[in-house]
Image (cartoon, rainbow, N blue to C red; front, side, top):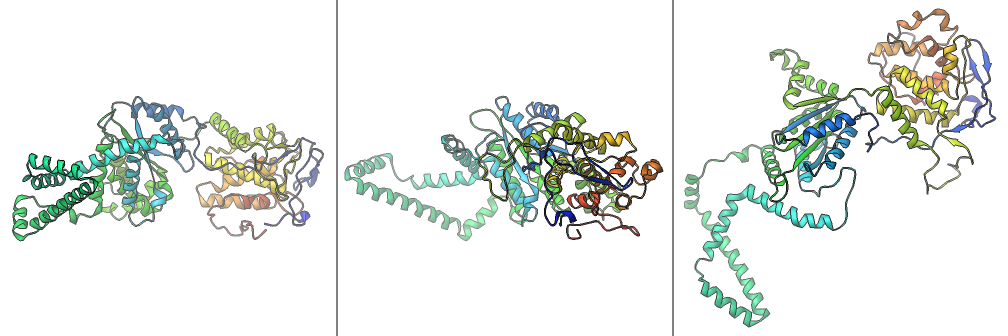
Length: 567
C-alpha cells in the first residue's frame, strides 16, 4: 500500500497539540480547519482474539442458570446445543460455565474435556480423535478451567492414588473374565505345593542368603512363565479349540470396525472414572468447539463422532456451533434423500437431525447496548497505554513522547460507541476487528481532523472530533460488506465509490432508500464518506483496503474495489 502523494512514501506525522489538519469537502470545495485539540496517539497494542475470563456481554444470568441445572439431580446424559453466529462469544460462555461449575465442585464435582473439531477435521480418523480427547479428560489431573499445567506434589499423589487404581478398575471392568481365568490358572499351578512345602522352601531360602533368594525368585518367575506357556499351548490344541467353540457364544465384534470398540472403551472408562470407590459421584462436561469452522464433510463427521459419547450417564456434551453453518452442512448432506423423505425438504431434515442430537438448544442473542458499551470499554482498557513493561524500545518502535496520551480520547470513545449503535454492530469479534483496524488507520494516516458538510447540524455533531470521517467511513464500509445480499452490497459500493457532484441532502432520503432499505447509509453518512482525505485520495479509497472484503455482485460500470496493490 502506498502512502498519499504528499507523504512521499512515508506515513503522515501524528497531529500534535498544535497541528492543524486540512480536510477537503468535495461538495462545497472548501477547506475546513479543525479546532486544536489535545493529541491522542494511537495505541501500539491490539485487542487479542482470545477467550475471556470475565463476563463482558451480560451472560452471567445464563451461566448461573445452566450451572444450577447441571449440578442438580440429573445423572442422565444431556446434549446442549450452544448456538450463535461466529464471534458471538460461545467459547467464552462455556469457559464462564466451567468456572461456575468449578466453584460449585463441593456440591457436584465436574471433569472437563474439549474436542476442537477444526484441529481434527483432516485427520485419518476423526472418531479416534474424539475418543482420544475423552480419554485425556477422564485420566488427567482435575484443575480449575483458568489454570494451565500444574506442577507440585498433588498431581503425583493423584496419579498414584487415583490413576493407577483407575487403570486396574478399567482392566477388570473391560477384561474381567479373562483376568479371572488367568488367576485360576495361577492357582492351579500352585495347587501341588502344600503349605508345609512353601514354609520349608521359604525358611531354606532365607537362611541361604541373598544369592539363593534371587535364584529362587527368578526360578519362581520362570516357573510361572512356563506354566502360562503350557496353558496357552494346551488351549491351542485342536481338541481344546473345538471344546471352546461349543462353550462360548459367537462374537462378531472383530468384523464391526473400530467405532464400536472405542464406544465400549469410553463407556467403560466413564463408568469407572465417574463412580470412584471413595468420594462423591462425578460428572463430565465435554465441549465440542469450533465445529462451524469445518467444511461440510467435517461437520457431518463430527456429528457422527458425537455418537461415541451419546447416552452415557453422567456425561453432558455441549456442541458450540453456528446454527446457520450446521443446518446448511446437514441440508447439503441429505439433499439427495429429501425427495424420498416424508419431510421432503433438506432443510427440514437438517433441523430434524439436530433435534435428535441436541436435547436442550440455547441461542446466544446479540448483546444489548449497555453490554456493548462495557465490552468496548474493556477493549480500550486492554489496549491503553504504551508498550508493556520490559518491552525494549528500538529506533523502529520509539516510545511515545513524554506526557502524550495514548489511545482514544473520551470524545472519540463516545463517537465510536455512537456509530457502533448507528450501524447496529453487536458481534464482539467484529467490534475487536473494527477497533484494531481503526487503530492501524490512525498509525498509517494520522488523525485527519474533522469535516463539516455545512448543511446538517446532525453531521456537524457527529464529526466534531478527531478522526471522525475516517471512523465513519470504516464503519460504513464494514456495514456494507457485512450485508447478506451480494446485489445490495454491489449497489451500495457503487454509490459510495462515485464522485460526489452535489450534496445528497438536496436529493433527499429517497436517493439512498433504494440502495439501503435499513437506512444505515443516510444522506449525512454519504456526505462524509464520499469526501476526500486529501486532494488525490478519497476517504473510501483510503479506508477500504483495511476493511474485510466480501463477494460483490457485478454491475455494469461499477468501479473496481481498491486493493493494496492497486493503490
